[in-house]
Amino acid sequence: MNRLAIITGFLGEVRNRYMLYRGSRTLAEKLDLASRVKGLDGLELCYPADFENPAELKELLQPYRFGISAINFRSRRTGKWWRGSFISEKASERQEVVSDLKRALDLAAELGCSRITTCPLNEGADTLFEVDYIQAYDYAAETFSVACAHNRDIRICIEYKKSDPMARCIFGTAGETASFCQLTGADNLGATLDTGHALYADERPAQSAALLARANRLFYVHLNDNDGRWDWDMLPGAFHLWEFVELFYTLRKLGYTNDWYAFDVFPKEIDTVDTFTAVMQLTRKLEEITDRIDVATMEQLLKERNSSKTIPYLYTLL
Image (tube, rainbow, N blue to C red):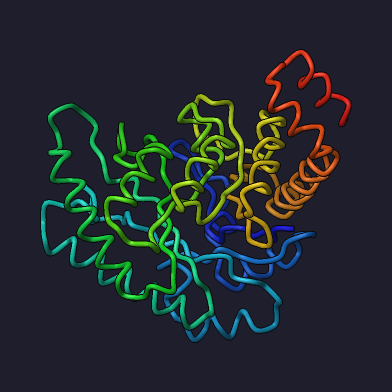
């Protein structure tokens, strides 16, 4: 069974472009909140926010039994890297982000964490003829390759997303990300499959998982849901119950077990502890429904490809 983690960024300040729902919280306050979420196994720590004082972080973590699923490296920062960090035209900015990523890799090693995830949202463009795509992929290959070489024992995961804040990110789909990772030749460069981002990109998460796994690039999974029109970061299963069941079934076939699911769910005006307690309950419920699938029956149905049999069978699971 996969363990469950919360991305710490969702335990702090909650705001969107229109309003502030909740003010900032200290690292100690965020860890205390997490400790009150029933069913939680660990955290995905955020860099640099949680690492302003690494010694203090280690001290604050000691009273808890949190596992560390990953470190989330923020590759977009206020006041810099506005035109991308990994693909910046400025060599100094590319060197800066690589140096900072190396520091995050070192900190991950100190914590016994073998995974860095990053969502390079500023790597893209708003309009046509705004970016040289050929050069952008060359720069990205250069920067990620150097970072991956710093510690081959730690996996770097690109969390792809079609847009936001750029109108079109260069890592927008599972296929684009898998192709890019293979282009670099770095075995420890792969993808974070975020179910909300996959749905927003009009993907079926199970299919995306299969493709990434066959390319040996399925390194990590984030769970959340949306209506397919925007990345709303909602409770798992709020809109796509069967997509989650199909994903969990496929992940088991692929061997993504005894690993981690991490959640980026946006609490908004709802109590943070209540929100993430519901997240844990819903995820385990979706897994429970998946458990009811008779593997031999499903594999035969998959061979027959007859939805008049498959869909009714699925509804017998409820």
